[in-house]
Image 1 (cartoon, rainbow, N blue to C red):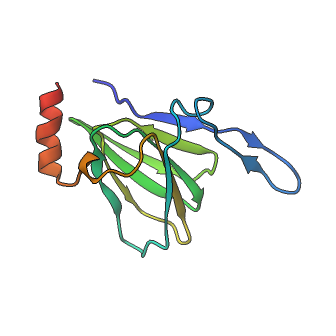
Image 2: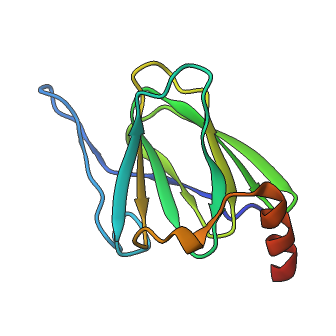
Length: 136
């Protein structure tokens, strides 16, 4: 079985005055942006995320610093070190994910294809495992 997680490289416009990166709906990412949020000031040793979405697709990008995203899709476990501000990962629904190993002053940007909906979250890993089994 193969992972459905994809690396996304965003445009990087280089300039002596500083670089510029952007993203647009249906251009660099395959969905309409419905929600954007960011995680920052994470104390050393802490993890964020530790959940799956039932139907939400998300793009995770490091805006500053870096971190590791640990994922699980059924039995497929992966780890992604993100530390380039124009590269992220596209995570499909029903993927358990945990964001760890934050470098000091990191900012994690998350762009999704749906608005916040608490019912879309699976926050218990055992519930995730059972829900994933029902899909296959």
